[in-house]
Image 1 (cartoon, one colour):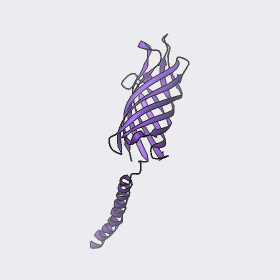
Image 2 (cartoon, one colour):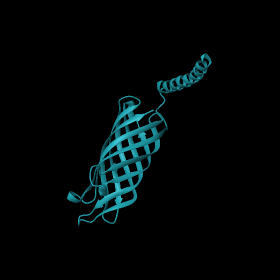
Image 3 (cartoon, helix red, strand yellow):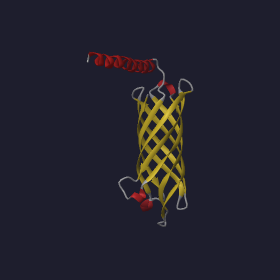
Image 4 (cartoon, one colour):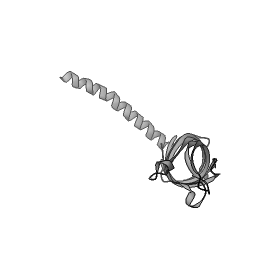
Length: 190
């Protein structure tokens, strides 16, 4: 009986050592001023697609973006990742839209203040419902690229509040145009 307890303790020792080592290396990296390498943004955007007025589709679009970041200098870094979002929630399923795809961004932190400026390009693939001014309402599958600019206030090195405004380019048979998408997000980096 004593022998089994000893084996369990022998296995717990190396596991506890590995956990302590991983926490120590993470803490050391954060303390030495190294920038976080990963980030996740949880965002709520307001999307309006199609002809204005009663025929517009869209709505609140919650989305999640994950990125891997690489520093290019003291104040500039780039990131590559992906995003996914849904809009039209709470309504009829035929008005549900989804967008997702790769994203690339550049971030600049000017003047050594806790504010960063971001520029992100997205090549989203998805399904969007669009109506034109004459009442033709269709759902389209395709690529819908977007460009987004934003500013983030870094409350700590790992948490930020972000305000963005994006422009999505839509070209369909029912309607072609630009969707302007203001948004607010929370960001966690590590």
